[in-house]
Image 1 (cartoon, rainbow, N blue to C red):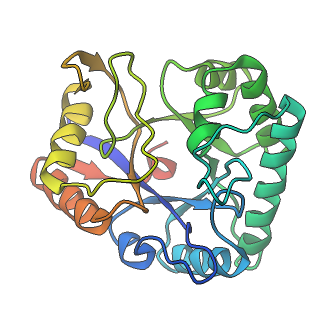
Image 2 (image 1 turned 90 degrees about the vertical axis):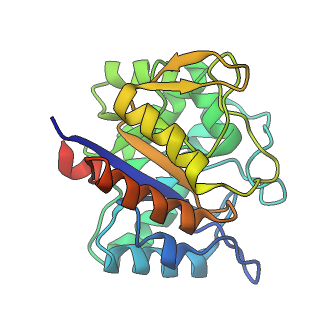
Length: 254
């Protein structure tokens, strides 16, 4: 049986004159993109350009909302109420949707960013707030999160389509939590592919402490702010094809 996997990238994370990543070239090797919506990164000009490129490359497009934390790149926790979190997400979905409407496209999925990701996948009240924002935005919008999280279980109970994510360019602690890096280290293609291949082919990954953990990803994330991300994505795409794993957007698989 031929396995299939979606490759997604977090992009559109430049701001003003500050350029983060190489989005245009990275998009040549992925099938889905999560676009920053202006809170943790991105601005109107960056969003417009990123949407335009993604549409032209016929990619599956999702929103990547985060905390309003440009200084900390969305990786710092902000003490907010569930209703505030819901409004943060709604605001950001509306911003991205405004640019997509120009091309008669819709948001396919929503994937939280950074500290917001960690919050909504572990806390029921905040997960519900996140889910309610997605539901109110559109019936056909799915959610990307990790498997066996509070967010996944609640989203499924609300009959929302969920796609499970694994981060081959990050390390995991012995509790199975990805390790937030305040500053991304350079990714090595062979190292990332080794993790990715094991996750897709064998449904396993190894923590920093050497524990073997189980995973069943629908999509693998390549972080667009990582140095060397284009080389990593290119290497993954080429090697997966050589090893009999088909790269395909989860929007087409399902």
